Image 1 (cartoon, rainbow, N blue to C red):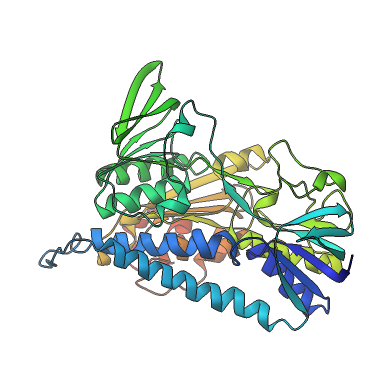
Image 2 (cartoon, one colour; image 1 turned 90 degrees about the vertical axis):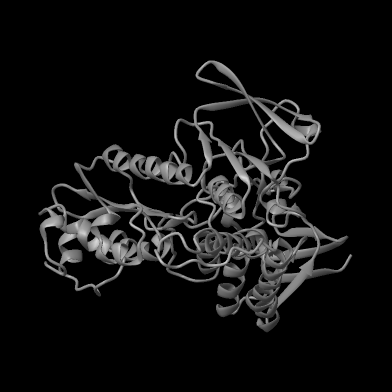
Amino acid sequence: MRKDTFDFVILGGGSAGFGGAIKASELGASVAMIEQGTIGGTCVNVGCVPSKRMLTVGDVYYYRDHNYKGVVLTQDPLQLNSIIKEKDDLVQDLRAQKYVNVIDDLSNATLIKGSAEFVSRNEVKVNGKRIRGKHFLIATGSSPTIPPIRGIQKVDYLTNVEALSPKRRPDSLVVIGGRALGLEFAQMYSHFGTKVTLLQRSERIIPEEEPEISEALKGYLQDEGITIHTGVKVKEIRKQGRLKVISTITAGKKKEYEAEQLLMATGRAPNTRNLGLEKIGVKLREDGVVIVNDQMRSSTANIWAAGDVIGEPMLETTAAKGGVIAAHNAFSNPKRTMDFISVPHAIFTMPQVASVGLTDAEANQNGFTCSCNWIPMSSVPKAKIVGDTRGLVKLVIDHKTKRILGVHILSPLAADLIHEGVLAVKFKLTIDNIIDTVHVFPTMSEAIKLAAQSFYRDIDKMSCCTE
């Protein structure tokens, strides 16, 4: 059997795989990328790109004349087919531009279509052919995970994949799951005109975020007509005519919810099955996550992993960064490590949620004498100017040194505003560093400076731009 040999063999053609391929190629390594599905992975195909497009369209449609008196826009019916086609065209364009063309332009990289399985620590089998490598990168991503709820196998339901391309807009929708994905799709469909009910198992939505942000966002979503129930245990799902019926228990009481459609937003699981990892000594967690050190190396010396297969945070940005670190450590020195503390994340509801660094609780658990303060966006002049004062900014700082440990934002444009916070956390800046930095007026980004100033004074009794 003929064997092809490469310096770096990558299993998966998403963000982690491409991050690794580009860096390894720059370092002079020959690269083989093996992809069994659509090149580009989750983000460009069924994740970040199409979902944020659909969310943006929903925002424009829903908020078209909400904030400004005297502005009345025509309310034509939503043309869902046109919206989906535009979304699909965008995905196709970015897939070609950022993935297909990129791999084609790497002179020392080869794309192989097919499923890979390890036969030894230096060989995988693909389409009956053996591919040999000095180093391997497992970057096979993740897939939606569905909990074993009674009756779920007998009911048609949506995951994030199907929910991006509905054949028609459902009149009613139950979303199971109240973290990022569930909230984004709940608001997207609600803005399109669907009656949405969201069920969350924990006592609050987005439980990993600061409680002030969770509660405020819940209120904003409810104000828009989304029904939210927390502390819900889903016991059974069944079909009743055209409707799905969800049987639950909340605070010891039974309750049923029904809707035309059901969206399961219950998390994602790593794609590590059927890769033959047990044959080569790669250790996995019980949930299938590949265990790696901070250099992205697995328990088998020449096997690296990055992206969703190594678990949370399952972000496109950390996947790409992890792939770069793995390739760098495989082919050059000095070794590099992953700094997860300064990695930001965002939830693209409206208003958006964006966070970086430690929460209040995490700071205290890590031994800091923590000081926290938050300001409402109504204290930010630009928020009043644009007519949307929803949200808040919370800073978590070390009480002794005034060093910024975490920045947490709920606001329109929060995902864009967070990067000043990222630099503050990454480079261990203090609130005094932020206060001493001149910000453009009027901007939403002033919010972080105002939050820093709030540790010293009442910002509602300041003139604009005061230090």
